[in-house]
Amino acid sequence: MKKVLLSGAMVLLGTFCFSQNYYFYNRQESIKYSDSYGKTQYKVISNDTSNYKFYFELSTDGKGTQLFTVYKNNEEMYWAAELKKSGYKEVAGKIFKQSLYYNTASKENIYVFISQDYKRIIVMSSDGIAEYY
Image (cartoon, rainbow, N blue to C red):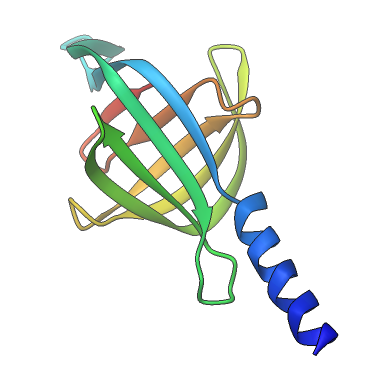
């Protein structure tokens, strides 16, 4: 009986240890393109101030897949599941963990870049649009 209770407590504790909320107040959407001279350019196409929350958790399938749900003003926008870790990448002098995720809203694969301190998150879709939090 003690083993069953201890196992249950460990599972419950593990669930609490692997979920985390991160809050942001600004979302900037940019597009990367090549100009007529062949130079890479970036253009801000949207700049929104709202209450954004990223809720990170592990899947319950036993595989430990990392999931995150994005909320805007407490309304769920979408959730995504990690497909593959892709190492680290430097963006504007800051190191980001890069992973491939599946976005359930757009039904496409997205790249997600998360700074090691979780203060910056970049979500990049296959059409070249990047969301900066």
